[in-house]
Length: 435
Image (cartoon, rainbow, N blue to C red; front, side):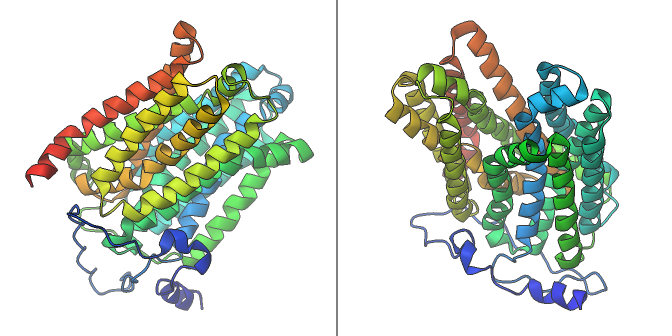
């Protein structure tokens, strides 16, 4: 019965409720960027996948749920700092280091974990990562002290980094190439919704039942999503060349791939240079009360969800145009925010604009990287590391700027990073123009 459900699920259309993200894209006018060529069918055999459906398969939503779970765990510490500091017998600053540990584990541990699992089939690798992630959250829920919690964050961070890479590879394998941008957008809604709801949900659960209950709840959610994934995701065999680390690593010699990943770092860095300090900027410069700021951040999060859905529709057909437009608009919004931070209407408008065109570039960024390299787990995981590096660089750069020039400085830092990101697109734009 499960095997029958696996095979038929791939042929179903997405539910009407997600039509805004999975429906047919509007016809484009003017010249379009060439779509990625279709992959040849896999050979006959026990592991042969069914014919790819004409629409984004519903099983892509399972990858989105997995990403949502991991992002919720990532943001949980931010909403539970005082409770965790008391429970673990340490100070709030040391609890803050747990956030850094998670990010660094994603950036550096993710590729290591992906490499360690490279001989497994993609769906099997996902289930192993679910198990590791569950173990990390179980350790976090039961951690007797700070050291155990630090180890738990490193384990979950590394599993999260690898999950992004392997999960996006699975999305590419089960979706027709002309639909991959849209499918990637659906998967990345897990990131957007996790950013929107992860912190308040973990804070809510922690407030009712304690911080350990928040990590236990994430563990339960992990088991539920893992079980659904085991039942629904199709069996995928290795592609040609997969499993040979030397062959897979050779793709990183291509400067186009490294350039695309560097652009992703700058796009995310530009956004997080500002986003990391929205709360003090909105309270101390714009003049909003602390009780109002969470509502404004929810508005920002809603903008990321909407922006991601729009970007996903054009990520495959207008990849470079979408990224360039996003960077240009982000530069504009960050500049407006910096110039008018004391005025509520332009400040909030600019903040919402940053939400629409900042991290929402992920579907187009991923599409660009996969075309420059490939859609296999190692490339996707290393790209996730570059994205995480953008979070670290942006947050750190914004903090340094505050120390030197005041609260307005992170907004200028973000605008500068976005402008540099635009410059990195010039070689690709010139080549596309000649073509």
